[in-house]
Length: 116
Ligand code: SF4
Ligand code: SF4
Image 1 (cartoon, helix red, strand yellow):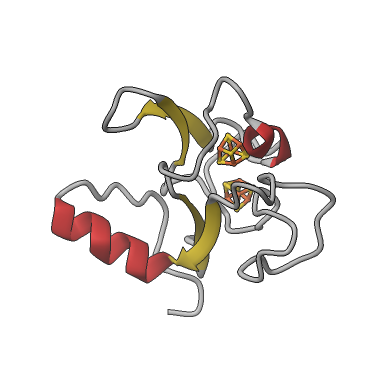
Image 2: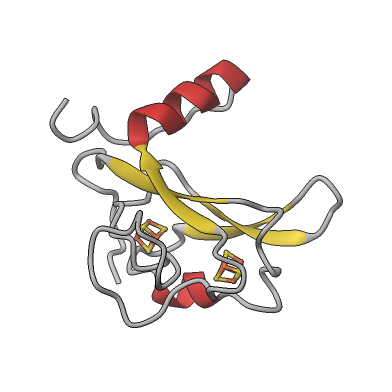
């Protein structure tokens, strides 16, 4: 488990689709898979249902939370978000920042994207 802040922003980070998440209290497999402390948190969706969400300022883009079979993950993994839900994709960090900035919610943490 990595407790501290990351050194630099990753090229990609995980993004969870709340509409596909089974529920943070019912599942939480992604939280168990994630090596970064407090990276995947529980948040209410628009209906007040608790789902998992990835902190953009903490994710290192390792892909360990992504469902087996989802090709956005960069490395082999033993388990991840259940394939029935497949709620997590790795997305280009810059695209996530751009989306959050346009929504006025960006808090990106350390650094520029790797390779930028
Ligand atoms: S990509 Fe890695 S660091 Fe980011 S939320 Fe998934 S398991 Fe955690
Ligand atoms: S593993 Fe997938 S379905 Fe389960 S809590 Fe995480 S995002 Fe939701």
